[in-house]
Length: 337
Image 1 (cartoon, helix red, strand yellow):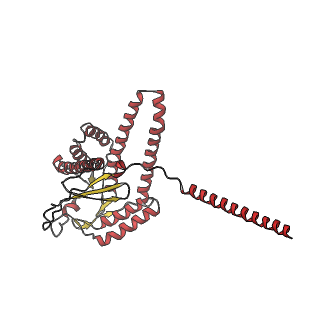
Image 2 (image 1 turned 120 degrees about the horizontal axis):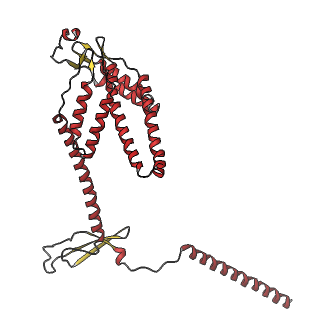
Image 3 (image 1 turned 180 degrees about the horizontal axis):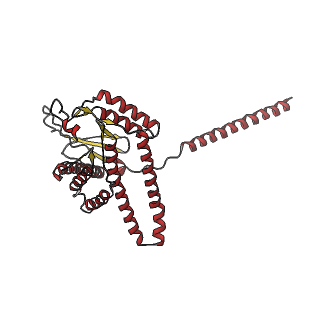
């Protein structure tokens, strides 16, 4: 306490200063990202330790930098433990729930509710102990932070706030986050000094409702735009042969795919010096609906086979004629001889 009280303030009057730059942090972030991808997210814990080591070393509190003493191996072991616990819970939920429904029946709903309560409890406990671990690995002038509270009471209160937020359709979220933030930090300490947090719902309400309004407005606009586009497309394709304006001549150009565009133009017969062309609105019409059906054409393979058959027959008849001619010539020659 004496070291903290006697420490001089920073030059600009701020107790906490950060001197890091994007040029220093960007190579660390890129290399961590590539190594995490190559190692199939196994390097993620070491990447976080490396990033925190840099960020803590560039953070100056009063007159000395902070120091991160955590290691990647510690965080990796914690990650494995959490993954095993959540994996076992998930497998029990998926496979065990079916057996419970078949045997117990309606009581399976109670089991599902208990599983949800357990999941929220573990989530709240993980958030509390994650903050406690980060403070315990943060050093300043040989002093570290932490907490002696195991976090069980905080996890129980977090379950109540989560369910209240759910049943109130998310409206209680700003108040719940403010309450949980204060309860987490008020249980922490740094050296002999305890933290004091006094966050109110006014600090979180504006950001929450602003974000919610933006998301809801964007989703509504997207759904309305898609619905309107589909409706206009259906109306346009259902209009057949609708033209606007009066005119004497009509020009029509076909479009591949069975559609055609029709435009009518009109001009007065007696006034040639003032040509007037009144083009109607181009309308897409389905030409195949009014076009009479053509008789089915014979396949080209059949025509070719018929042609080849006819040619073969003609060739055979020609050969028979030639052979009969030669035989008659031989007979006549033998008779004369």
